[in-house]
Length: 525
View 1 (cartoon, rainbow, N blue to C red):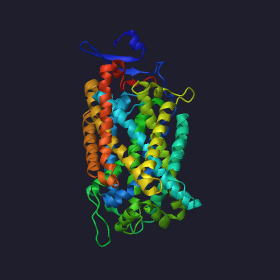
View 2 (cartoon, rainbow, N blue to C red; view 1 turned 60 degrees about the vertical axis):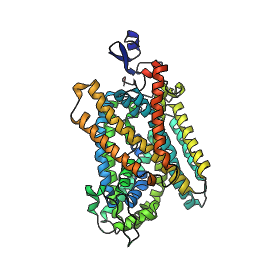
View 3 (cartoon, rainbow, N blue to C red; view 1 turned 30 degrees about the vertical axis):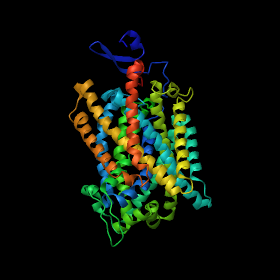
């Protein structure tokens, strides 16, 4: 490599370390030989729809809150969401600073590559792509489970869960093949409806003063770190605060996808940071309020916790029907199905953009780095993601069976795949915070800020690793007792290390490809 006029014409920026020339970045904005995503396709609202729908507010509430209340920090569940809001908002400070420097569809992959080197960058990129990839299959399991219940309730017909899961994957494949604006429209409608329903749920209970008052102790920050105590008189089993905090952080997975849409947004240096902060803080307030009101929907806390332990699927539906009306119960029953679909579609889009980034840099077959000539969507990477999701669904159907949707679709496909992905994301987010701090020290020393690029990343690293530790110490519960749970950490670690090993192989055998790992950015926006 050289810093010749030819390199500059190809958007290649280099720096010298002694006699060695190192590629700093490759700006693809003026390159005709690199397939690019559609510029200016989405505004702030579009990026918010794409990322907040990935966090899936209705899934976060109806899936995660019952487990936190019944098996985690109990009445401290809302306080657990407050703690997660603070940690993730602090994480966002450094993440936003990096997003302002590098506009790329690669997200974590590109940021870690610039800060900690190509080896850790590629390991993170492949691990992130696989994590978001399995999330779509996970949500297909949740979708199939709740859709099956709804169809039985409405039509008294039992449709096999693998069929429903594959139908979801197929529809997402079609929608994501087209212009990203179509995805934004679909996700926007789904998000607005589910948020509206949960707002009605929360304020409906608040205005009635709860079933028997509003429990203020639920907002005491200290309760976020206290285990749910057992109660022999009522049959209430003890919980672990770590479970509650893990489910709280799980509820945000998806918000960090905003930088992946930087190349398609109208003003990425402004829109991506705003989308990050709005989603983190907005979701934090929303999650805290709705989970608090769900507890207030029961006459006593023990009644809420017992419901969460015995029948979590109806934890929200019972107070919705008793305190607001049967119509809201029916609406929530439908929206948990559409919300699962929308969440799966959001993760599909992000996974496709990771595969696209890896493809256009030649790290996986370059065909996956192509964009559609008309829609400018990463259509080949999108098709790859659809095939992966479908294969995971089929594998679970073959291995676990098809006759028990609760176990096979919900606990195994949804639960195990979600836990597998979240463990990776928590680790990658901590690694990304470290990369951001290192990047600013190495390349922008004049912009190093005592809080934004030093203290904030440190707090983020400690917070993310703490929650990761809680996940690993409660892995048996998170894995619902299935043998696969024992392998989750090792699978995640193996994927990451294979990515690192692949980078070392490229360094020795394909130097030009190695040089551009995580370096393709889009600055001509």
